[in-house]
Image (cartoon, rainbow, N blue to C red; front, side, top):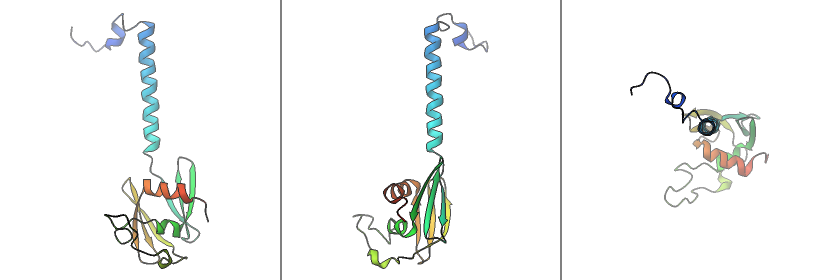
Length: 141
């Protein structure tokens, strides 16, 4: 039998039974919930410099985290800061000024932000790394 434009689930008497209809409704509801969860997780956070660049605020889905700029700067994973093979730090924390500030923040696609610092360094922070930094240090200053 060819497709007559009528959905099969509406025309087949077995599929119209309460049990089958309930199963399809449950599947549809689960799909809608899963898509909504994915949509929320794929939201791009807003990353802002605050207090004249001395703090960074991350806003996502109504949640807000605030971290001192120096803490973020110390967590930079660039090749100048961390050995890509060993993960060892290539700097001393005392070499990063205590008053280091954010000069600019710009989005880098849907996965990261680029941050230019007052000490001349530039960082690329993935949102997942920034999330980890915020979780560990949010609202510490």
